[in-house]
Length: 300
Image (cartoon, rainbow, N blue to C red; front, side, top):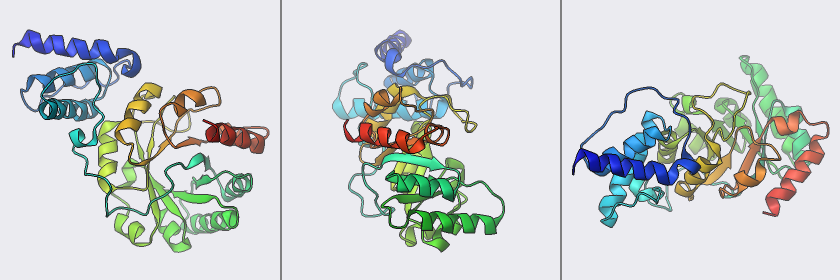
């Protein structure tokens, strides 16, 4: 196939998906091609023009090539979303972490045990303790206090990062970032019967998370957030929808800059949970805000 044909295919992909998936390019690294298949090269070039980082563009281009070979035709208008084309293991899986509900509902990410208890008593179904301290004794006390705070409320508690303290205290689950996957003892978490949630920020990280078969996958940041430095630019609701279609066999959590105004377009993606931080902890009446969000999640 000629170079001009590859260019035309890439242009067709960009034209079909720019509105929903396109972002201003933030990755200035050179595009690398693993082989010379024209569909693969066209898809990867298109993904780079749409603003996907190198690693994510490689994932999508490989999937586009796999789908074209599987179906026998190239279709620029249909974005790849079949797990088999991305090399994901079949479902259901007998191995992996303990399951959690497909719809975790409102997921409150909270700074201390006091806030955990307050939101659990308000009826929030899923809460996370994101307690920042280098003192192991302080961490252990806070984790144990958070577990005590949700007892009898029905809320499921995840502990951010501090997996050792969570195991010792018998927490429901642990949430880890991508940088923590290599550092944490995943076998110890699994053997303790705990649930595991993993943060992801695009295709490459989602595929990495999927290989671990976690209890849920968090996807973001959907919108800009000032709470932490993000490795990637905000992904936007269009990409969230594409990610959710691919990862539809997982329990999914959308996170990052989500407020009441943006909630409806986030829910259109099909995710079963929305994580919030500032929308609750900065509210004058957080219980009222939580009730409103839970109502909107339940009525979608």
